[in-house]
Image (cartoon, rainbow, N blue to C red; front, side):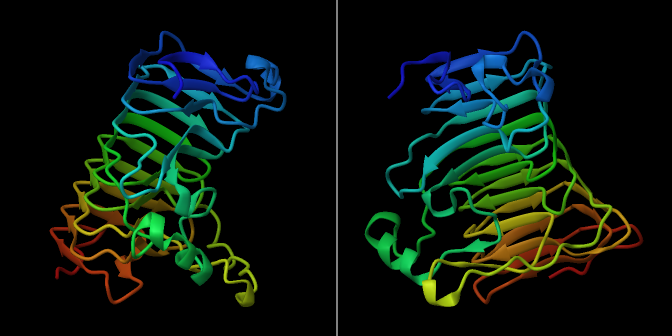
Length: 298
């Protein structure tokens, strides 16, 4: 384990946050193509901040992280093991994150460097049975809180894999087709403003790997919010707006997620409030509004 502190990786790629510790920014941190030598990082493509262990509070104190080339602003690896989580108990709050890629990515082995619409292949599931649980979908507690953040990104604003994670009181703007991906049980997405600035049609379905390789495939659907392997997740009090010339088919996508609560949200410019992609998924939807009227309840 790394010692607690705020330091620079020897590879020169990232700042590192190592806990247990509480960090407060005193000024904006900006990295762009005009400052590619900042922190000794040629090209500036790596994460601005990388998490190396647990029990970290990162308070932006009203300041901003801004990157115009990186694939992700804040990155961490939760491990994915049922009983061997690598990082947990993380809090990010009170500031702005602007990035062309993903805002905050905290994922496990199963979905590392994969899009949220990825589904693992049979060979991966068989190999992982003895380490990652009987369904490849059982995650340990990560306890991540994103609170009072403004996240403006070109890709997902937040991609969280684990259990008991919360995103609340955040303003999210995404220049793309997907805003949030939550994998694991007992998450909460509460009182956020989510804007999809999608001024172009839905992209073509992703190219699928050859089936005989058994390395996985991709769901062809897109949605503002991806919910996967997440029984009991709560989506409440959010304002979700999809801008652009074309309606999105779904605002919320459910995969292997029974008993999701979708309550008191305002969702506009979508054909459906949610879609369940399998028989295991279900939602209790009530008091949800759209631009003219209300969404059906069930």
